[in-house]
Image 1 (cartoon, rainbow, N blue to C red):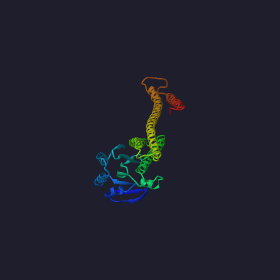
Image 2: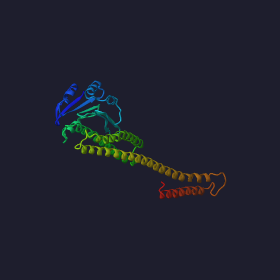
Image 3: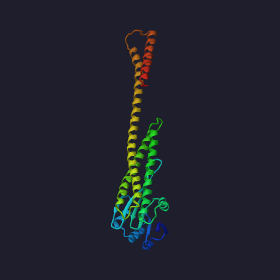
Image 4: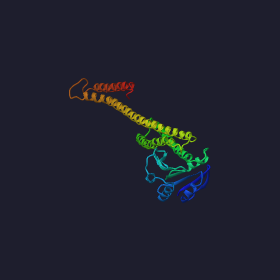
Length: 318
């Protein structure tokens, strides 16, 4: 269930070796080891922790899922928690947690559902020689931040589609409201992942044994991408708020238009009601019980109704 690699002089010298041989590989001069464990594999995590001298609090955090993205510094190693993110077509976000131990010559990742294929490919294709743990850590964090940017970009496209639906008169407003809620929920979850990751990357350059002068520009590039993802997320948050306010304003305007039309038709309908009510009085009046009285009242009803309709139409009330 675990995956292992040993690098020497930037080349892979061993792969998929048993965890019990970890110390033996690290005993070789210039060796750098990567170990990928599946979450829930207690025996494997204990074995690696004993051989590398991992702090018990860091091991406990790796066992307990649901940690926030963070960077903890211990005497002999660093402990990081980062998240992979993915946005589906509906705007819902799924995450995969990854715990990372960084020692002087070993990188240990503990996760479930975190696809390491892109990371290993990046290590193999990188122009940097994998002769230091910092190189492996850079490839891992670069892939994580790139996925954050991909998730933010997917949300941005979904918001553009939502904006078109809001201004579509034939759109189902209930479905649009559900879509807005899903996007806001996905964006909030993404923001809780992206912003702390930027803080994690900001703290890494302080460790000069890990991020030396050669690696500093590469980590600076990753920090720049993380800052871009964080700023983009904040921008989308404002965008969602604006779209929600726009939707409410459009609904209010449509309601005002409907009320204006209903009021106009009610005024027109009131005319025949008033005229027929007047002619229905139980007292004599001009034209009472005469045919010409009927035609006069009819002409008054038609004339006033047409005139009122024309006036409302000219004022764009109907």
